[in-house]
Amino acid sequence: MSANSDAQPQAVPARLAAMDQAYTVTTNRWGRITMIISLLLATSVPFYLLFFGGVSVTGAQVLTGFLAVAATYGVFWIVEPVTYYPILGPAGMYQAFMIGNISNKLLPSAIVAQSSINARPGTRKAEFAATAAICGAAAVHVVSLLLLVGLLGTWLVSITPPEITEVARLYILPAILGGIVVQLIATLKQIKAALIAMAIAAAMVFGVLPFVPALAGFNTGIVVLLTIVVVWFARPRSMRGARTRADGDEETIGIA
Amino acid sequence: MSPQPLPASASPHRSPDLLASTDVPGLANTPILWILALAVLSVVGIQSAIYMVAVRRNAEAADMSPREVNRAFRAGGIAAIGPSLAVVLVAVALLPLFGTPPVLVRIGLIGSAATEVASAELAAQTMGSGLSGDGYTTDVFVVALMAMSLSGAGWMLATLILTPVLKTGSAKLQKVNPALMSIVPGAALLAAFAALAMTELPKSGVHAVAVAVSAVIMAVCLLIANRLRAAWLKEWALGFAIVGALTVAYFVHHAG
Image 1 (cartoon, each protein chain N blue to C red):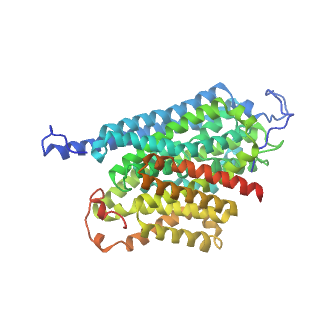
Image 2 (cartoon, helix red, strand yellow):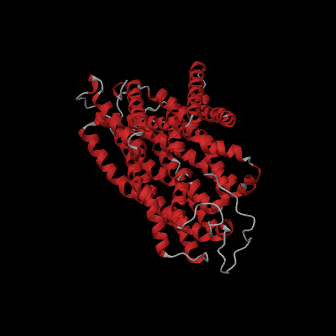
Image 3 (spheres, rainbow over the protein chains, first blue to last red):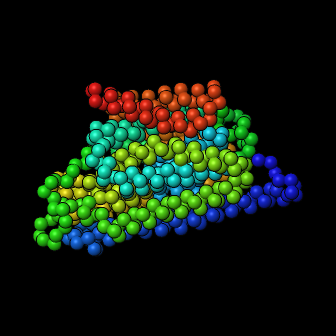
């Protein structure tokens, strides 16, 4: 988009910077506020049942159950936000960890949107596109939950053949991931980085995990970290020592 | 594990007698919990509305036209149709196990089916039961739901605490080394999805077939979209890939 003619030449960058700032302030402030509210609402669901549901459950039983879950998933409270931050950015973080289904729905939506308006990850445009895409995904998701689970759920239980539910449950993730990897590669056009990521992922899944199964939960985080390091050291000469802006000329971004 | 219908002997209404009730949906489908679940859905809707306004108002700062903003929103929504329907299918299958409001909050939003069901099972085991059979009483359910919810709260708290920290960190990196920050997001995306897709391959032959079919359909769609300049096909491609991969998976699964 070109600068408006009514603005003075010097005022344009200042105006755009102010808009950029406004976006950051709004999304961060309201992202945090909405997330805290939904955290409180969601967590009060089991507490209501605990106190008013007429069950005889002790605090010790709750603690034991929670510790069993925390022992398995506690690490991921930290690992997942750190893994997804470079992809989502601060605004997207507050959306994603509230809406859920990040890798199987929200990130694919963001990638499709970036690809459809040719925005490359790492640019400001890509960040805005991802936010808009996650909003679109949230709208579709909330409506389908309300209608199909909330309103018609009990009826759908009675008419859906169990074989279909079974297949969807087992294979939805691979059915999403195959396509999204191809779309990602086509959008980013960073063949070298893609090959590095694939090689590291394959080495982890087929070379390391069979022997160190305890690492399974950290697999994605490890592959992300190693890929960033290797891609960084394999970057083209043109980027070495260069002080290019992240949203600068497309030629200088990423591994071509 | 597959959800099992409650035994026919389960009492249709909860009674304060000494026999432990197994009527979990009866306990969970109370008006207050419905209000809480709808409130969480509303908060997601409100957050999306605030974010969309922020994107629309300040799009110029990201060199994005209003048309591109709408395009990104629509593309994100369309890409989410397939994954959302899959979540709906799984959520519907879990209704007899958890009741509608907890399913809406935990499976539909915030978490994902795999994590939440595994968490519930872990917590239920500490009560000497699983998520099915006569041992799965309302007491076990409340302990499982408490554990799932507190663990989910851990994720959201970590996001609230870590996002500002990571933001400061990446802003510093951006200043010290802009080239690094232009490489990280793309590399992280490629690595995350390479790792997720690669992890699916050794699970079973059908998983591998689903990944491959989805990838091939996506590649064909993108080729056609580029050849015919059909932008809409880029938005729908993920949906086609998911449906195609699941259809093939259905036949392979039931053939083998």
